[in-house]
Each structure stands twice: as C-alpha cells, then as structure tokens.
Image (cartoon, rainbow, N blue to C red; front, side):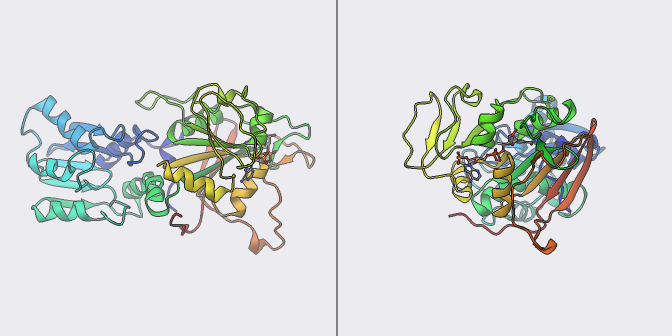
Length: 384
Ligand SMILES: NC(=O)c1ccc[n+]([C@@H]2O[C@H](COP(=O)([O-])OP(=O)(O)OC[C@H]3O[C@@H](n4cnc5c(N)ncnc54)[C@H](OP(=O)(O)O)[C@@H]3O)[C@@H](O)[C@H]2O)c1
C-alpha cells in the first residue's frame, strides 16, 4: 500500500538515516508552499556518504532543490567541490526552462558523477527526460524502486502534484474525528473537543501542509472554526495558514464568522444568491457541486486540500468517490445511537456496495487512534 502523502507528519515516522530519506526530510520543508510546483529535496554526498550540502524548493519561482543544495556545497566547500560526487534528489531533475533554468544543466555543469533519483516526474510530458539527459551525458543514474522503501515515500510525497498534473484537481484528504461508535457530536450537537491534544496538534500540522482547508456551511455555523495553524510542531520552516474554503450555497454564514477574520477566504455559492459584502473574501458563484469546486481549486493550482467535513459533506464526497485519503481519528468515548453520525446516508444495502478503503497507516495519537486509509484504486478524472 502506498503511504499517505503526509506520512512524514506522523508521530511514529522514523528519523531519516538513508541519503534519500535525508533528501525527503529536506523536501517536506517545502510542502504546502510550492504550488504549482512539487516539493523537492536534495542532498550532495562525498565518497564516504558525508553530506556536503542540502536544500529544498521553498516556493514557485525560487531556486530548485538541486540548485539550492549545489549552492550550499559551493558556499561551504568552494567551487568544484561537487565534482565527482553523488547528488540525491527526491524528484528527477528538470530539463525545461520555466521560471528558472533546467536543473540538469546545473548538475552537469558541476561535474556530479552520480545521481540518485527518488521518483520520476509524474507529469507525462517530462517523465524520464531528466534521467535520460543525465545518462546521455555519462552520469551514473539510479532511480529508486517506486513500490518500496524511500522510493515509495518519494512517490507518495508527490501524489498531490501528480493529482494536479494528471487530473487537474487537488489531492483530497477527508478528516473526521469520532467517538468509538462513529459519532462526530452528541445528540445536542456538542463536538468540541472529541479528540485529545496530540490529535489536534497533528491536524494543525496537516493544515500547515495542505494548500487549503474546506468546510461546509453547517460546520462553519456550528463550530465557527478559525481553520488556521496554531499548534503545529515546527518542521524547519515557519508555519503558515492554508487557504480557507467555505461551501455555502445560500451565503448563510455571517461575515462575522471567525474564518473570515484574516482576509483571503474563498466562498463557493449559488449564482442566484444576493451578494454579501465580506471584506477580503472572494466569492465563486458557480454553485457548490463538488466536482466543480475541485476543478476550480485545480485551476488555482492547489495541490492538496483537507476537508474537515461534517456528516453531510463527508457523505457527498464519499458518494462521488472524491476521497483520496481518509484520516479517521477515534477518541476513547462512546456517544450512543442518538449522537450525530460521521457520515450521512449513503443508501448502502449490500456490503458489496459499501465504500471501501485500504489501510495505509494505523497510529496511536495520545489516547486516540488514527487510521489513514487510501482509495484502493487510482481515480481517472482528467480535468474539465
Ligand atoms: N468531528 C469532526 O471531524 C467534524 C468535522 C467537521 C464538522 N463536524 C461536526 O459536523 C456537524 C455539521 O455537520 P453537517 O452535516 O450539519 O454539515 P457539514 O457537512 O459540515 O456541511 C454541510 C453543509 O455544507 C453546505 N454544502 C455546500 N455544498 C455542499 C456539497 N457539495 N455537499 C455537501 N454539503 C455542501 C450545505 O449547506 P448549504 O446548502 O447551506 O450550503 C450543507 O448543509 C457539526 O456538529 C460539526 O461540529 C465534526
């Protein structure tokens, strides 16, 4: 089973020891900040495996990871220090002129002898071209196995980028936190807080790693969440807040809602509602059908979104088979049959019709249990 795109956030994630794991640890520093580019990390090693330089891609338009790492080598050890050495990078070096020159040219220019690649580029137009150019220039290139170990972790990290490239839509993570019997709130709709501090810290870290957090109108009205990053553990970069996305067909959520406090929220609503004035919020008036919403977020270059859904929105996502990863927290309490269920009706009669997922991780989170599940097969949508 492919790991979660965000498995590196988990409390039981092993410390990096292999060269590719060190490059991955670099790459994770850019997650949530690089769109439309992927997060990439790189280390340069001497013949004894000592790290001469390291770097990661921090944001679109900035230097790519290989360039940052090679600049680091030069600044620490002087010109020519990478000659004959090994460069380890989580994604194959690029060959095209974008906002920055091709990384392959820089790698060749420095005289690197060996390149270890964590994953090939998921963009079908450039897949394999970086490796081919390096090999044609006589560089010894090793591509990690995509289905095990560090190679699989590199592929997993790139899944949101691959989703944007191949489907034109972001990677969708659905998060829910329930009692042992699958309820998200008491019968009186009390829901704060079911899970304990370690789970909430992890959710904040996940918010920090995705490009947007999506909520439905009812959750915004009931819980009045801020959807900001407050308690995330530091991962080598300053935390930052994701885009806040509200699905509110009739614009029922008041402009005093906490999620509107910082400017920049994006609201999806129907075209026929009377416009409201919300300072700093942008309104998309094409309805809130989930495929439309995801296509629009894809057009805005978002790589990954976290849906913090109540039962209605969860059911809608599951019904349309739009969930790539499911993060399900179980708190050690029971709310009973009159509590609010995590997922509204899916009209399932036969077990064969149930939404099934494959388990990617099971993690202990303080007193809670987290299961991360994955869609068992690749989605086929290719954008609209
Ligand atoms: N434990 C957890 O992890 C967790 C997370 C979130 C929420 N909750 C709890 O869930 C409860 C709220 O759940 P809920 O089911 O009432 O609401 P919800 O799932 O949060 O939001 C559903 C609402 O979003 C709007 N919406 C707009 N477009 C939609 C679409 N395409 N599909 C589905 N909904 C869409 C609809 O309202 P309009 O028609 O007005 O637009 C809909 O009623 C609260 O008690 C909250 O505390 C728990």
